[in-house]
Image 1 (cartoon, rainbow over the protein chains, first blue to last red):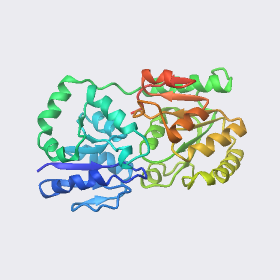
Image 2 (image 1 turned 90 degrees about the horizontal axis):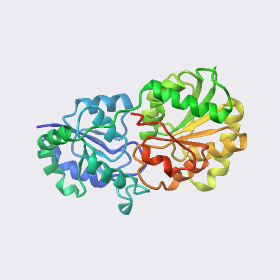
Image 3 (image 1 turned 90 degrees about the vertical axis):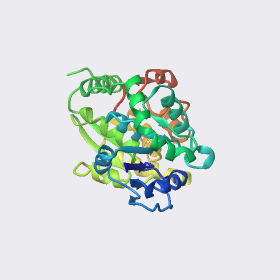
Length: 168
Length: 151
């Protein structure tokens, strides 16, 4: 039994397909589902919306994170983990653009993700995740985040240009 | 440019909030206030900060009223800079900032890898500068600055 966190993000679009797909996992694993705008009620502990601090704690505590292809992907990767990712599809009215599909295709080629395009394969991806994740972590580097000093320098430079002010 | 600027940050929830919070090393040096969409994550993450809560405009016909409210808010706060990572609430604020001649900075999400559409496209076009997180995104905008991955 693994501790599994499922999150669909804080946006206004429902992601029923993913929540229905994780329902079978609830019988075998310790699953918590953040359901967002979806009206689907999974047979395991769940909440529609989760504050950021609580989400960070849940991400850190989970053995496996299953997420939509949003900002959570990088949060999980920064924890040294490999998320299982299902992209929202514009064609299924799960989002208003193809951004998540494009992002996940890119991550699938070079990043630390397990992409699942057919949710019928989700249980198999969970069962094989430990071995898959170990291989990805070993072979694929994670780009570094910008430092606070470099970030501040960049924004100071942009501010000076926009405001026409000289540095103090 | 440490300190001294009046900055307004417009934020929604989810990834937009992550991006704007990640700018903290910069905005905490300035006189920063927020305009944010009320949500489970924004209400807790921004607790204790000066926030004006503002729901997302309901639909496009309401954009005129939303711009009017944004114009009045910017008139009261008189920011030097307006920064946002997007979603629907950003549109009236970027439009109002143009009317007020307040420079705007749009933070593009890391998950944007192709041509943006909808409000992301509009906000990027309305902004004076777009901060991008990947080198290959610099060419995607008229005036883009590479900042690096924010989180």
